[in-house]
Length: 113
Image 1 (tube, rainbow, N blue to C red):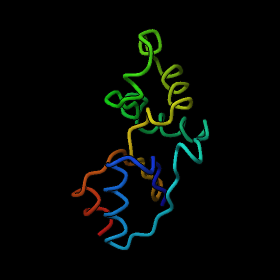
Image 2: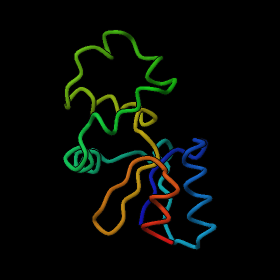
Image 3: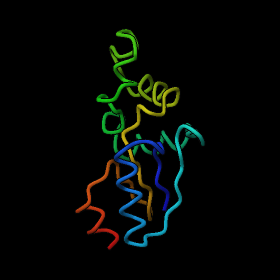
């Protein structure tokens, strides 16, 4: 199981704390430090769609120019997420062929406790 995120993200911290408290083994992959492979991002996009992955609430999104945010399609959104990994909603959890985006304690409890 791999948990993708950014070390300082509050939601990632909650997910990591929950996994550790429930003794669920995982590997953490820091998107800023370790980067993100375009093939992996493409797999995520095929699985859940680029709209579900794109974080439009964060400071990185607000820091983009109007032209960067306008007329997004899958290709442009993926290029932005690769250039700015903090544009990916966090955390992304890969486990047993499944993919979860975000942290919901009840969902984690149902799947891992």
